[in-house]
Image (cartoon, rainbow, N blue to C red):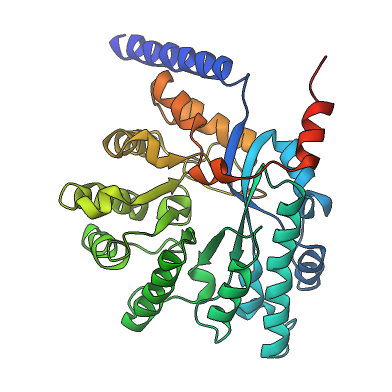
Length: 349
């Protein structure tokens, strides 16, 4: 009987939080800090390799359509150029020069997409850090005003977490990004088990030596679903910040894409215990460090928002603050005449 009353009370509290947060968020749109856009060429190439797409091509290639469908106020628009350097694309990239050109073209497509809505979109280019053209592509993209940040997808680079030389190469790229004021969105692992000792080492020896670095950790540092590696990365960050003013003062943020998964046939559901543990760590670290992110087209904004509101378990005030968070990069964006005209068209008289 007591268990039933407790369960009912918990359900009523969650329902109340959902109603309050939903009402508070009806008047403003969410900033999505993880959205992938693909060029028509990449979609066609991927299809030729057997990849099946569940939507029309424009749902992957048209940034304007993606913003409208997801009702986003703005987004990090992230290149998937690194795919051309993977083994899966060997049949497409028959030479190193062709690979380099296709990577550049994919990054340029992000720049063109951002140029259409510079007041709403932040462009991130991508490159394999182990390619001999990596630094050249970094410099080329940095010179483009519509490409603000660098996406590093370490699993796609065949990054070995046990390889000291790989860590040195990553550190060199992070040092370059810090010197040039290029923010980095880092996809660290593919779900490999990382214990607290390893994550503490990561924060102290890989990130902290670059105090000017602006870092966004994709999927809470792992492959989604808030696994123990993600927990250890967050806890390692929190513990290191109690010892290091350098790390505490750095611009480090955690991207919540794929962190809380609900009823989805393609992914395992995040357990209530894991949701509760994530909420505890959000409190410890501070809500301001966590950013709403969907990982579109893997998940939609509405699906991600619903999972966070219904399952994370944060009080309404903190949850509203989290959903309202936006990167400072959005505050530096210019407003284009195209965006201003669209705003006028959608503003009732």
